Amino acid sequence: MRLPKLPAIGIRAPRLPGANLKTLGPGSVSSLLKIALDVAYVLLALITGVLLLLWVASIFIPIDNLNVTVSDGADGRQMPLTRPLLLFGVGAITAYFGGFLMILRGLRKIFRTLTLGDPFQPDNVRRLRQIGLILAVVTGGVWVAQGLVAARLAPGVMEPQGISDLLTPVFSILVVFVLAEVFREGARLRRESELTI
Amino acid sequence: MAIRVQLDRILAERRMSLTELADRVGVTVANLSILKTGKARAVRFSTLDALCRELDCQPGDLLAHEPGPGDIFDAED
Image 1 (cartoon, rainbow over the protein chains, first blue to last red):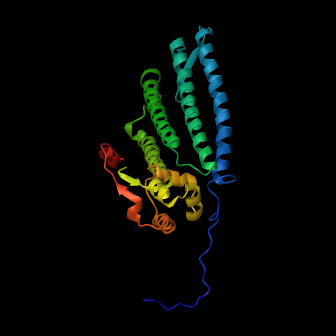
Image 2 (image 1 turned 180 degrees about the vertical axis):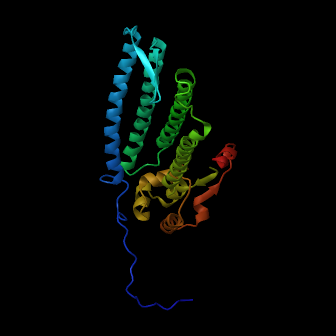
């Protein structure tokens, strides 16, 4: 049944700002984000490089008369800086930055495909899974390292992280893995579409 | 895939080249090759309609079901 056409009453839905914002392809939001990622990647690579050099140097530099002050603001407690402690500290920070460097490397490659307007590629599924795994390792590593520091180096000064502190990171990691599956489905549909004549 | 597109046989019967058919149907030669070699996953009704119109045949003349030993695995894809 055909419905009668109603006359226009002159009310128009307001246009949302950014409604016609380009999200994919050259000159889009994703290309801007890619530039930001490139800058962050270079900075993080420099920081990680410096930290790596520092870690190598900390094997050789003399640390006989150096102390570490553990303090919660009120009264400090001094303890000698041992070589294993120095190597653990610098190594943990280097690994932390190295992990995020690898995450940014994967993200840059994903955003490169976004700027080209073709994100549903099997390589992006692999990259997202790698990012999820690295994020899981980094999060777990930070949790364990903070627990170690709180229990061994600064008991009473630093509170160890509880399981509840892992909720948000675990949720983020799961979101990345779900996103990888979304991309896998997208890649499958793209392949189906390519082979539909 | 157990479905075979018998484009080779019909083209030979009509003495038509794949390029000529591609021009008439409006599908690229590359896509017709995918169809001919059995790599295609699906055929649009519009493509089938154009092929039948240009080759003066029925869909049943173009398609054939030839189950083979690997079809069980194909179905799981």
